[in-house]
Amino acid sequence: MKLLGVEKQGSWLYSEWNLTYRVGWENILRAAALIFEYTDEPEILTGDAYEERRAEVSDPEGVLALEENGYLIIRGLSQIIKVPLMITFYNQLDLVRAAVACAAEEFEEADYRRFNLSMCQFMDSIELAMYNA
Image 1: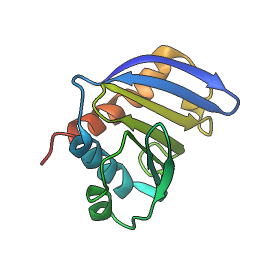
Image 2 (image 1 turned 180 degrees about the horizontal axis):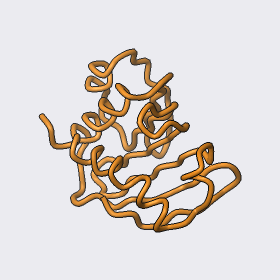
Image 3 (image 1 turned 135 degrees about the horizontal axis):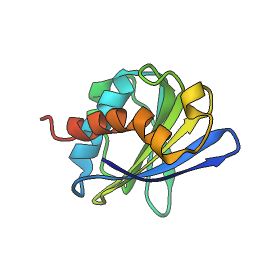
Image 4 (image 1 turned 30 degrees about the horizontal axis):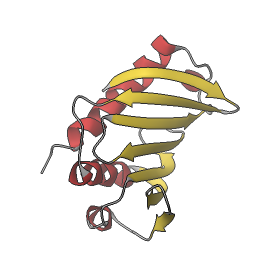
């Protein structure tokens, strides 16, 4: 994944990432299932232009069974990067948005280079999970 940009808003860093390819719903679900597994108190929201709803899932298998929507948001406390995280995937697009709390030294400033070094491997792992069947 390629970092397109990062900016600080309040106590959060908001970033946009470009996937190598546009992805479909099944790819998004595989990535979300992996994130779900390594997130404390994960919450999933799905929706489209008209409605957003909370998905009632309790394990990664439940994530893989979600009905297709326009987007999927997963949020919670990441066990990997050790801060609250929210990632938004868009169905049939190559754009991913991520927000991380400024709760660790590496996430205090919206410095493109520093943020990319902190998040790139994490985001690349998520993209690779999209293609593991």
